[in-house]
Image 1: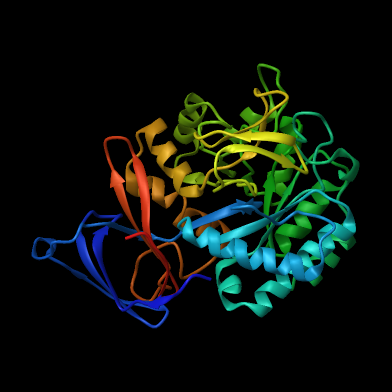
Image 2: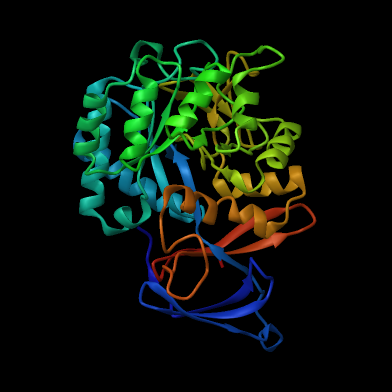
Length: 397
């Protein structure tokens, strides 16, 4: 990791109130928050917010969590390096996302994440839990997305239990298609075990979605994506999830995965049940250009952050922007206040996972904080400093 500096105090504008404050830190926690007269300082006044929380990251800055044919040491090192880069983006807590693959590949990925957490304290403190997205998903083109069809299968508790065991109990989210044989029983068991069950990559009927929620599903994974190109006017699995008051929803608000008009509608319907995620793949944070990937083949990353297939530019090759960029896009598309949008990427995901002591700037909470400049005219957010457990792990000042 880049050089770390212990931080004892921070000055800036609190994102929730706009008030200028002095935040005093003691060790890894926030000790005291006091009013501060910024007029006495000549420094640029930055905004202070909780560190962002991303429930879905597949990779970042060239580091891919789902690569196969790698040694265990290579996997562990990839996780360590990726955590460093994720922290630099302003995300201080996240769920590494393991996607559909064969049993051994997922087993090795879970093992690597456990070992990385046991070996490196910053990895353990940054990883909230693992998001298992697959292999219990729809095998239909469209809902399946980029998940390999040959590994899609019906849920099996014994298989999941083995992955949970080698992860050290770190699987805290599972995305599942309710229509698969045995899915409802699986959802019930997962919910009983305290796992956040999400509906996603699904072609389920309205009744199957209702049954999944009755069994304990509580969130929709990247609602509006991973769908057929054409759907019945009504009902369909997007409307059914959108109208289900017991379901929260995550969305990828990068301007590429969902049209701004769709983001606006989902935001109005879900309101305080909406969570922003990046769903970033390993090319997020990289320079624009053409790359070859193990999922989409040859892809092009545009300066706008759009990642598209070279052979068919109308098709996306994954998500390739940071969560802070999703926050600023969401503000621009919906007119949402800065504090509310930040909340969708901090306190709301923390509450969904049932995680305490993060997502809020408050005395006694962990000192996971970001300082950023915000240009209200264009909605741009520029992360200037990142503090993780009382240490400055990134600075752009």
